[in-house]
Length: 194
Image: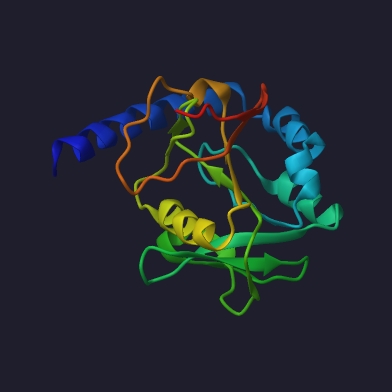
């Protein structure tokens, strides 16, 4: 393991411990947080929205996913594929069958229709104000966002987290993709270009 990867691994471990503590303190902050999203132009203008099913100490998304459907938006959820660390996005309806997929994550059945989102909401371990996201280390979102942005320059990526998950600087490598906005209990904030 090279020095950069070791630094990133250490940052991830520290940030996960921090997020676990924040989740216990702010378990219901998501209610306020998602109101900022619903009121935003970016959300109102989006037709196909990719969310996620939260796990562990991630911001809870059950109510968000229900609301997206209630607002007559098209909801899709990511599915991890075997090839190339790529995510595909499956359309969700009230009748979509959910299964336990890769890494024991709950995801839509592979038989669900594959669609392409114009807005992606992604979980994070940590983030910085410059639009860098620290995930779990698999690179699935980074690889997929890179591919999607080549096809759709208007694709928006919003990272969802607690404001205290912000760190001074995320350690990045050449594969890491910048996010466009940060959604916390303090609001929806555009990243600083650097």
